[in-house]
Amino acid sequence: MSAQNTAEFSITRVFDAPRDLVWKAFTESERLLQWWGPKGFTMRVAKLDLRPSGVFHYSMRSPEGRDMWGKFVYREIVAPERIVFVNSFSDEAGNLTRHPFTPPGR
Image (tube, rainbow, N blue to C red; front, top):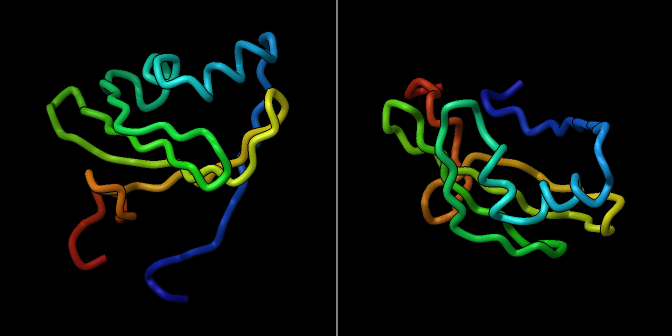
C-alpha cells in the first residue's frame, strides 16, 4: 500500500432534534460557525456554496493561534433529508492538502 491511502469511508449520524434545525445546522454558515470543529477552536467561513459540486471552505484557529483550513465538496443535497459531502484538509486557496500536523516526509 502507498503512503497515501485514498480509500473512502462513510459516517452516518442520527440526531434527536427537529429535522429542519439539523438541516440548518449543516447548511447555514452562521450555524456551522457555532459547532463545527474541535472544542476551543474559532471558526471562519471563507465560502459556502450549497449545491452539488459546491464548496464549504473554512478555517479553524486553535487556542494557540495556529490556523488550519478545510473544505467540504458537496456531492448530493436533498433538502431537508440528505446531504452528502467529502471533507478534506485544504490550504487557504482551497487546494487539497495533508493533515496540517503530519510530520514532514510522511
